Length: 185
Image 1 (tube, rainbow, N blue to C red):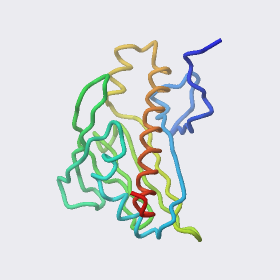
Image 2 (image 1 turned 60 degrees about the vertical axis):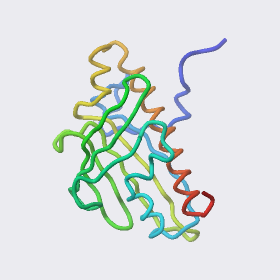
Image 3 (image 1 turned 90 degrees about the horizontal axis):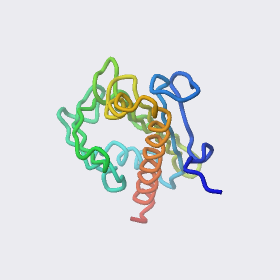
């Protein structure tokens, strides 16, 4: 007998707060993915700090343009996205973490209460670099908070699906970065 429920154990879930049961946006849910790259951390760093690069691999992210000189702490950029459920949009982002060659992260929306946070962490290994990509939604407003406001009874389902979409795009991005760094692409 089939089910329309997605398997809980196939997507890593993270929570800044909580988790509540059922899951809610106040938990700041997110996900992460990681893989090993057979390239020095400095080469991988150059790829993860190219804010245009993930657009080559993501089904949603379409690109970005620096508003300030970046990458640097506090530098701003505008990201462009597209999703079949809500169309196209732009969002201003700011760099929250920039510790070459170890961490590069950004958030969108309000600095005090971002709509989402995204981060690459790089760790040197004997064979190259372990690359981790993580994200969390909330606590500030975003497209997901608008969807939840329109259908509050579906909040856990909306969040579950959105985390899954983000995770799939993050895995594609990591694989693309790995393939470029290793000379496969």
